[in-house]
Length: 194
Image 1: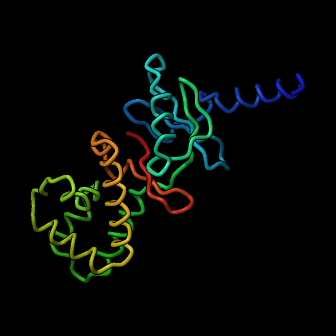
Image 2: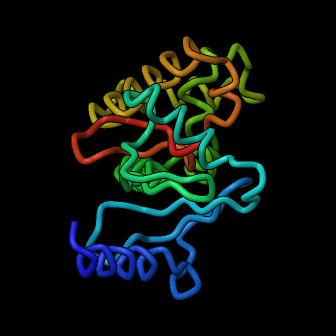
Image 3: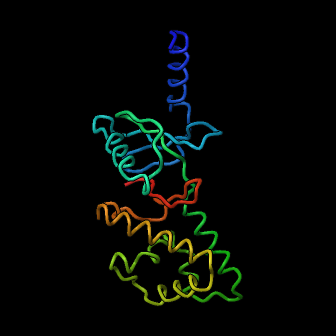
């Protein structure tokens, strides 16, 4: 590689990783998440605590289990650049609202389900071996799943992801919620974080 090409590559990399000029699109316990660029299907997960090298820990786990986590494009001890996933929460919320909107008079339990911010709890409650506080909600949820093929498919994909993650490490399912699940460009359900 010629020196001029190397300088150009360095300038582009610095420009892209200058997160000060980027809006945070998400945040978690250990990372701030930035859009890689406007047209990209990549995101930058920048560690909040660089000395802890959590980016490397995440990169190692993501590479070891590509069926569970987004694809990694680049990494160092402070950040990782990964595949941008379509978030599950809006998809699931919109689908449930649409289903309940088609019911003339949703009952009180259906209204509770619709307002529940993390509907994944209904889907994996039996896998976690935790009971939902209101058994009527779980019964109603199962009825909704059986009545709608799209919700049934989504539920099965989430259950499979939960089961596969739990086989690898039960710690992975401790942070299992709808805001931590995404769908890649090929339609595979993956965890955003652990």
